[in-house]
Image 1 (tube, rainbow, N blue to C red):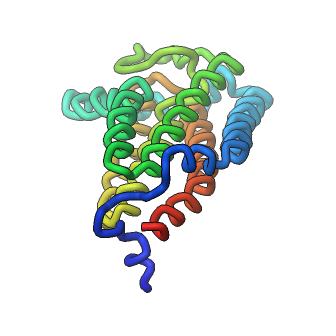
Image 2 (cartoon, helix red, strand yellow):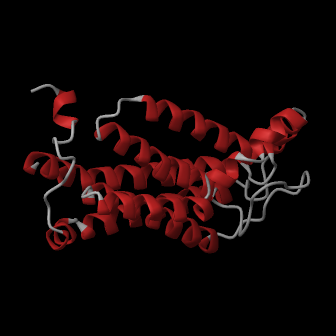
Length: 235
């Protein structure tokens, strides 16, 4: 059987794993360790930025913000002011909740649980890290768009790296092709660039968010991959 065929859902599109069995099968300890590792990566990057003397923005960060600010235009504003509202936990959380309920009722319970856990972990990582290492936002230009709480790390970067890429992975696993990865990658780039374009984050905030999100993404993919395979095999 080909790799693509193994990823196709069964004819009914259902995952015959009872809810109770699924919840018991989720490797909660592994997920906790993954979350703690992602948190530790965020703290380590933050402490490194502090040790380098960059906490209030290094010369290269100020230069990058200044050069990108020079590209501000009404045309770019339409994209850069809109994208962050779609790539933050404030908007992703209700969308993920709706999607998870729909998947659960459609008997795609592993996908529902996977998406919900990724979103919850992303939101908690954002809040935990922002209040562990409190960093002021850049004050070079007037900040615009969607922003709240301290600057480090970028919660948008955590969310689009972990949640949005997970959504693309689940679309791919359901047998709908690789197009979701292309869409997710384009959205990822636009959202991350917008955080610098709108002058609401230091570049190192965004880099840290990517790192934290990537660790959480890897941890959740590793935890749920066997459950996806089990569900597909049982189907």
